[in-house]
Amino acid sequence: MRILLIAANVAKTPYPVYPLGISMIAAALRNDGHDVVMFDFLQHDMSIATLTAAIRETSPELIGISLRNIDNVNLLNEQRYVDAVKNIVAAARKETDARIIIGGSGFSVMPGPILEEVGADYGIVGEGERLICDFARDAAQGVYPEERILNAAPDLTGEDIPSAYYDPAILEFYLQAGNMAGVQTKRGCPHRCAYCTYPVLEGHAIRPRSPARVADDIESLVNELNTGYIFFTDSVFNDDAGHFRAIVEEMARRGIDTPWTAFFKPTGLDDDIVAAMKKTGLNAAEIGSDAPCDTTLRGLRKDFLFDDIVACNDLFRKHGIATAHYFMFGCPGETRDTVFESIENIKKLEKAAVFIFMGVRILPGTPLADVAIEQGVIETGRDLLEPVYYISPDIDRDWLERTLTDAFAGIRHCVFPPDALESSLSFLHKMGYSGSMFDMLANPRSRGRSRSGEDTQPCRDTGRADPPGRPQE
Image 1 (tube, rainbow, N blue to C red):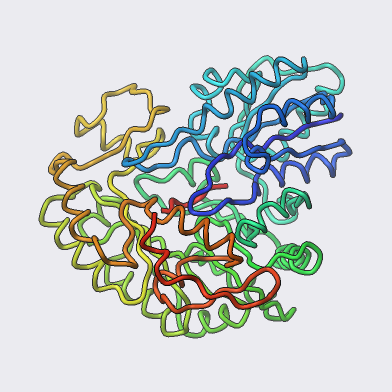
Image 2 (image 1 turned 135 degrees about the vertical axis):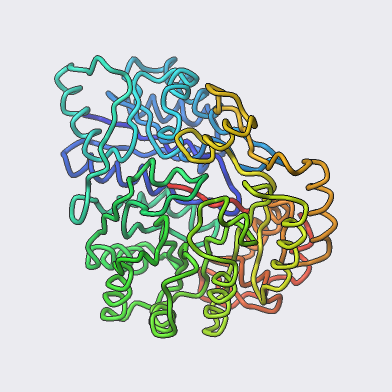
């Protein structure tokens, strides 16, 4: 079949992220013998006219759309992304009778409401590589399922998880915006954080990819596609089972030293593994801190303490690796006393970029949604497609915003509100600064590297101009 796959993401903060999820779908369909064309909505400046032209040129027999995020999870500057998909579906309806199927991490969180909202024919919940191939084979014979929402079991592992097909033209656009491409080393998350949908999307069991295949992906991106920075998209890179160590060992065996970053939990690391990761190119670590004091860490069902966060930060910094933390205020258990304690804790973190959020986005199927109902923050059956945020009933929203604004005013490496650096990050990427901005925030004199390989010196004042939330795939 001729299949048009549309990456519908429109988010640019903290940086445009290559559409890895739909690229893995493209790989699965191509491996199954289908003629696949990819279209990236952001690459084409969200132009419906350009999309319409692509549909006419492709004459697809099936259209797939990927919704990565529902909204920007920023209470102080809400942006809703479902409308973009609705517009894409409406434009496609005018040009073709081809069936339209939607998927992606954002869709999978609230499939029923989103499918009705955007008007697609079908939706796939969860990892879709196997299910989309089955759907396309049947569709080629004119056979379609009776159910509109199809659920994929999280059961792919090892060689069953395909390497992404990195469309050269689309990748080039994202390399121009930061020289970074994503690679997945595993699926699944065994943790049970109160707010998080990763276990809902990928299951609790860790399902690793082959280290050799991961290393193949990296070498292909670097040697064939001119990629200068790798971003591992796993929910947590340093899993307790130690699969990440096999990845690092394979990278070291092959002599890979391309700069990379990943999401880390604050425990389970030591000097030896951090030194080994640095030798393979690790130069920035996003630490999944989430709450800045022990009380609210317990409220989020974290299994570590703030002292663990400090120790992890110090370990990375000891090895010269930039660190970033994302902290949320207003978590379950938050009081005025914990707010003041948390502010002081954050200020004590040395040489770290800190992005501060107010409120926690409530999503269905999470423990936080149950807590919110129990405490009367939301009512049972509340439509959560429109952004709804949890703030502890013991905290006044306006007081919290004023307190955080005053506390972090003038502190360069502490960013509040979380989108305060958006224009500066975009500016630096256009200058040729590649990869993570965290080192720039924590070390104003740090140097980046342009795609040409030349060193670039970020302007020391740009951080004051105009967090990034964690991008999902």
